[in-house]
Image 1: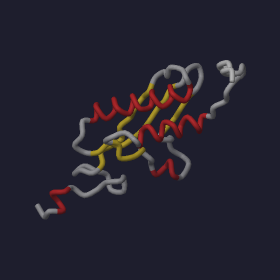
Image 2: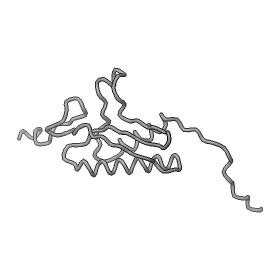
Image 3: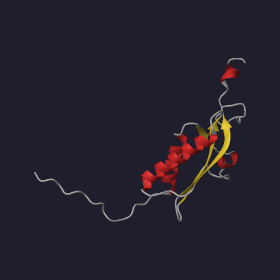
Image 4: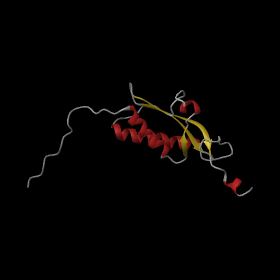
Length: 130
C-alpha cells in the first residue's frame, strides 16, 4: 500500500477569542509555583474594578496580570516563572511571539502581612502556639 502524501495546512484563518487567551493566561498563572491567586478586588466583584487578567490583541498580543504571591518566596523569581509560563502557553496556542507581559504583585498571602480573606493561611508557628 503506497504511503499517503504529507498533509499541508489548509489555507485560511483561525479565530481566537480574547476570553480563550485569558483562560490560557489564567491556567499559566495559577499553575505557577508561588502564586496564591489572582488579585480580585471587592469592586471587581461588583463589576466596577479592573480585571485581574487583561489581554490586548492590537497591534500585538500584550498581557497584564494582577496576582498574589505566597509569603516568604522571592517575588521576582515567582514573577519570572509566571512570565515564562504565560509566554509559553500563548506562544504554543497562537504560534507567534508575545509582546509585553506586565505582572503586578498585589500582595502576599499566607504570612504575617497577609490580607484577611485573600486566600491567606495561618502561619505554622502560630499553629504551634509560638
